[in-house]
Amino acid sequence: MVIYYLLSRWIPEGVILVGMPDSTAIQKEDSMKPTIIVQNVHSLASGDTDQFGRLIFPCSLCKKIYRDQYALYIHMSLHTSQKKFHCTVCQKVCPTMRKLKKHMVSHTSERPYACDLCNKKYKRSHELVAHKKRHTAVRSHICDICGHASRSAANLKEHRRRHLQEYRFKCELCDKGFYTKAEYEGHMGGYHRGEKHKCETCGKEFRRKYYLVRHKIIHEPEGTARRFPCEACGKSFFFRSELLNHTRSHRGEANYICDICGKAVTSSASLQTHRRIHTGEKPFVCDICGKAFNTSKNLSVHKRSHTGVKPYTCKECGKSFTQSSSLSIHMRYHTGERPYECELCDKAFVTKTLLNIHIKNHD
Image 1 (cartoon, rainbow, N blue to C red):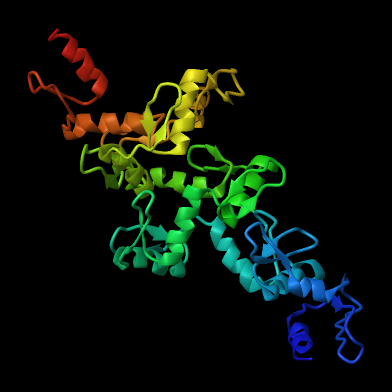
Image 2 (image 1 turned 90 degrees about the vertical axis):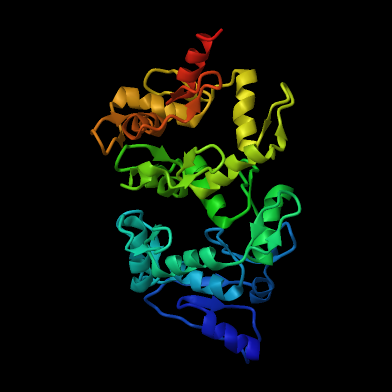
């Protein structure tokens, strides 16, 4: 009796529970609203299990998956209620005006909440609160595979899944695995539904919104300064994750070995890109001239030769460039930085190419 009473409080308007004893049957109807009949409340309450044996509650109408029954019943109101609030930008449907207002923040470019330690900016206050904990939290949970330090046992467990390839979600169309729901939904939208997220500044398109958000940092005024420099070689990066991956090369932690030439790289993605040198594979084709490239980044840079877009501008002289690396090299002429020194005569250069040309003069 108690279970049925609790369920009745969770069921949204327009849902009828069928198959319970008459003395405890609860029915919520509204002649103005469509109804959905849950034929077997007992099987719904028990849920299903995922590939790791964890209890899940999938929506029978749109296949979304929830970890608890209450969240599923709240979600069902989207299908049953006529009072739906549509986002005018992406057509997402929200059950309440309050949730629609919270969702609309994702479409704005304003980030009013800035960290006073690193100046990273966020759209929501709770995101800033979560971020600031990263500056103070002690990372005492160490990965026994790569040495990565996590703030909690739960974070370490999630991290180790990536080493062991323990996927939580799998695409039914291509069988690719994912560790988070966000990665799975981004894959479905970008690869199977053809959704694109376009940068308003330079026109570059991304399959996942996550990559667009990361990309936009390079257009911020402080973005050209690359906020994460390597202490070993001086090379700078836009993101901390890029710096951490780079520093592995200095520590000799290149665990991904090419089976053709034996070269070691620091990530599986880098190994996949490297192997294309041997195979000649160029899967990224320009839809304007047909020229092919081995990485999507090279294709994006090439397409700017057709559009004339030069999104990277020098704040000192106003000269613009098609790629960030060109701007970084150009800035050295303003700052006087010469990171590449000749070991024979101590003469220094702005690029490694100029250094190599110089060294030939000694031969």
